[in-house]
Length: 115
Length: 206
Image (spheres, helix red, strand yellow):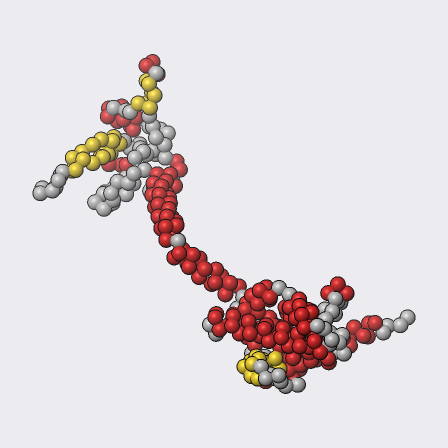
């Protein structure tokens, strides 16, 4: 994740951060750093989260009731705040995912136009 | 969640995140110093995003306003002299403004209690040979004026003076008085017993 900010164009499309965070938590409860690692790995190192927006997003999602958090012990035996999906969060993820697929499908259709 | 708990949680989460990132950087082959430096760098303005996260958690705008208010209260408590000066200044300012407005309202703003208050006029006499203007009318002149009037609906007269107001057993008081003709008050005589003369109703009516 050591990357040069000047050449860093891996910025997330607006509005996808919440969806990616929810998705990464669908795999199981995780702490903030683990969420960035999951998204980074899952995107084959194409997507990188800006921590400056990750934690505000986590707190926002928690306030909205899509995730809950609690203290737990991390894989290296340290106290860490773990986040987990709520049922509302699962439904939210499904909605956002459907929207995303519709949108990206439409964009692909446009890009695939021939003539 | 209380504010302190909130900050503590944020601090701990950041610390944990940076430690994890540092370890990760070391695994990727960085020296420990460089690893920590990069991890810190990546986190960027820590205070900035902390306040953002706090805002997300506690409701943004109103929370900010509430914290500003609390801060203002604390500052005032610490600087009592300043607080007292400010309060006294405000009190005097509000008091003076209220007093001035009361007078302006009664004298200038509030219309006189007549049906067409904007058509009232004050009639004065002139003694042109002697270069005297705004001279009051004598009672006989007023009588003539009223009887021969064709311009106004009606003309009433008033004359200011002083009087001694005395109630047995109490200190007598010097008061400003106003002698008026009966027709000065449009609601005469119904309102005479309850209406006290106001400052501002001291012009004659037409």
